[in-house]
Every structure is written in C-alpha cells, then in structure tokens.
Image 1 (tube, rainbow, N blue to C red):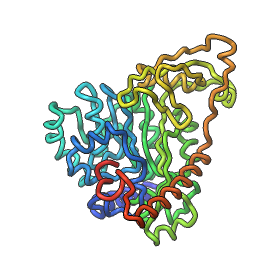
Image 2: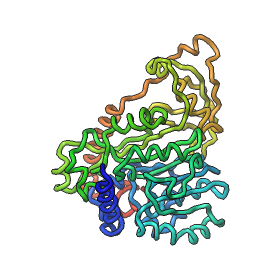
Image 3: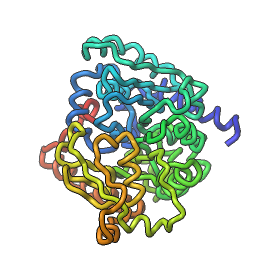
Image 4: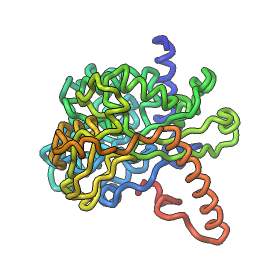
Length: 389
C-alpha cells in the first residue's frame, strides 16, 4: 500500500473504534467477540479487578494472555481500552511491566483514566502505561529493541495496512526467547481489493484478514520467527446480511498463534526434524492454573511430570524461551531407541480450520435448539459475554 492508502486505513479504523462503536454490542460480526471463555483465573481478574469502563469498550477475538508470566515485561499491540493490559498487569505483578500501544485517542483515554482505581484494587501501583503510536512503528513510540519478553495482541494486527512491518517490529522488540502470543482474524481465501478497503469490513476485523498461508510464510520465512504454532481456532459468524453477501463463500476464523523468537533452524531436512524426536521434555506442573497439563499448541499437551519426546524446535522453545523455568529438557535423547521415537506431526492449518467450521455449525444448531426450548448457551451468552469473554 502507498502512504496515502495507509493513512486512509488508519483514519477508517480510528473513526470506527473511536466514534462508530460505543460498546461491543454495536458490532455486526462475531469477529471481535469470538473465541472460547478465558481460563477461570483470567475470568476472575476480568470480573473482580478490571474496571467496568474498561470491560465495556473491549473488542477482542480471543484470549491471548498466557498464565505463568510473573515478572515479565509485556507489550500489547493495539491495546484499545486496555482490558488485556490490565489483566496482564495483574499477572506479571509488581516485578513485571505492561505497555499498551494504540492510535485511538478515545480508547487510550479510557485506558489511562482507570489505572489509579485498578491500583487501589490490586493494593499496589502497577507498572502499567499506555502510549500513543502505531503498531508498525514501535520504536518511534518508545518501545526499545530487545526490551520485551512477551508481546500480546487481540484482534488488531488484521487492522494494520502493513502487517510485515508489525511482525518485524515485534521481532526486533523481543528479547531472545521472547514470544508473540496473539489472537487475530484470518481468511481461507485471498480477499479482493474492494473488500480489503471496505470501511465496515475493516472495522469489523474482516477486511484486513490475511490468508493463513500468507501469514505463516511472512512470520517464519520473511521475519524469522520459529514455525507458527496454533493454540486455538474458532469460526467467525457474520450475522449482518449485507456483509455476508459481500464476502460470499469466504470463511473467517479467530486463531490464537504463538510465534517464538528462537534460533532453532538447521540445515537438516525439515520434515525429518519434525517427525523424529531429538529431545525429551518434562512439564514441571508449575504454571498457575495448569497443575496437571500444559498445552503448548494443538499438537503438544504435556502431562505434568511425564517425559515426552519432542522435536528439535519444540525442545528449543521449551529450553530457551520464557517457558524454560517450567520445563526440564534433555537436549539429546539418552539412547538410539529414544532418538528414533516418532513425534506427533504438526496438524495442517487447513485441517484445523475445517474442524473449527464444523464445530461452529454444531454449536449453532445446539444453541438454536436451546433457544427454542427456553435454555441458554452458557457463560458467553447475553450480557455475561461482555465480562467473561
């Protein structure tokens, strides 16, 4: 895009989130409210500690806040009213820090105005700040290179007119072993120009959605992150008839990706490395909220205190990222038999999206049946959705 095109996108997004939307009830799709309910520990923080004014202006498509982050330095891209920053601040505690960056003045005002009240609830002054800036220009906004352990983002990267610049900026801001842990909207097809510049589709996080193949190529091959790992995927429902007609048969998904800044590349054949164990990892059961099992991604769930064969890239992530203190990793297999142990192959993204679409269809059918019988669809229905999801 040209600079004029970029400015038009910025103006459209600022207007939509600063003036058009007054609360999450104004949204026309489920893109900014998709995803499963947060972990109970996070839900408790949202319901009991985050100010109502912040929750009411929340527009997110997932739950991109990992547990076990005490003491880390966290950056939130497109922090909006600050809900995820407030949650992260409670999780990192007084020894960590959280910085939110956003370009929308109306959202930043809400975020900043509630920090003092939040501190009184916590019982200490949190290391929480909100800066004005563009997520494509992190250093210009005061985010120093190699100053961040964890970067989070919730349904924002799709709004950027220059997504490669966003990923490069995050990569440069992360320390070695750092992670971009984020939820965003993706498409199963390339979108035509008319849809990518449509004001409402842009604001609803649909118009800027990348094809998953393009995103994964940019993140790994162009920027240098380890292979993108999917933690969850949910199909997005477009309820507005006019918008549904515009996008046709293209399907959209909220996906939580994990991108690690790990030096794990080698000249070895990629497929061989992913299919053959080169290490053994044991989860220590020390991440709050996960005493029995921890899911790194859809393909790797580690039972506490049980050794599991992993490939070289997973071993590098568990041994050298911020997760290292929660895992014991033997870098080399102890025997030839162990070295030849097959590890689970990565599930293709296309297969995960098909599963998510099928699950959504099943859930809609069940919800319709529950509505017809006078029931409800649980925590994330009705007025409860605003706070818990």
